Image (tube, rainbow over all chains, first blue to last red; front, side):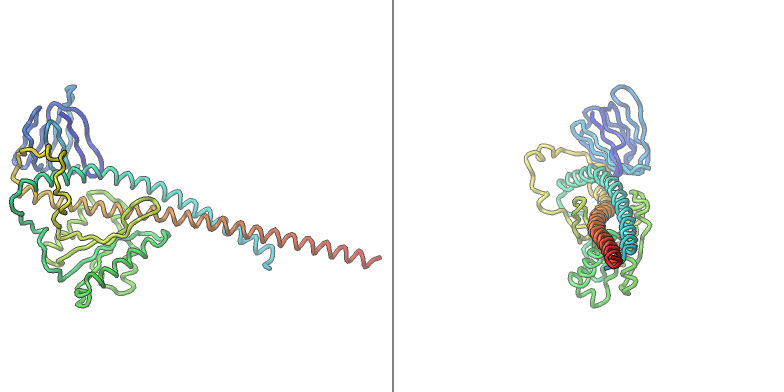
Length: 80
Length: 298
């Protein structure tokens, strides 16, 4: 899965990931390979991801929106 | 003809002016590059945002009522005039100010007569002008350009959204210089609030786009998603306007300072010519005096 985390001021992350966990407005959820297309708003919290080589990374955001489609994931966030 | 010494001091003073304008040009060029980078970094976010909003809208049968989109008859109008904090950038500020006044007196002529048009000045130059001429000034913010970050801009944008929601104003417009390239900036007048519907041309489905239309899961639901995204995209618009103006300012200053440096060069060349001629004339006169004196002694 290809993930991009973009804020208005820069790109926080781009690359292949195995797992993404995001703080959705209706509750935190994870996206794995072949997730159904989804658009969800995000609340303040932490985005956690695991890259394909097994490294874990976290980013704090102040809210935003996530779009996942065809294993392309975009997170538009406002960095905290 | 001016005395030799006078010309010499003038040349020296023009030279030092040239040094200043040259330095200012360099500084403006460096700042221009920096803020141009900012615009480029904002672009992917803005594009993605409008993409997502388009896919949400596609599945909507009827329009959602969002307070920010409420199109009231414009009785009270606020014009946000974006200028720079510093001068020495050619006609940059004067143009924006004129455009703002023109918008107020032509587009909103009726409201203007009833004194229902106010200005909000972002940038010292516009603020000082409006204040000195006694135009209705609803507020001023000069500090924003000191630190043009998204967080700071959001704070200011929040104020305008509140003004609109509390019906202090029915319409909020921008007048600013949009950055095109270092030498060209376009005077722009656009509506900030109420949010307008996306233009029709975006709706035309291209074959490539149709493939990407997917059965999205929307969380929490489309209406509240849109309600959340519209303010976000407003913030982006606001941020972009300020960035554009800021970048255009540096572009304008760079061009103005470049011209000033050229002018100084011309002036120096002319003055040097004068100086050399005067010097030559003085020498010739001296020789004539000596020869004349020697002649008389014979």
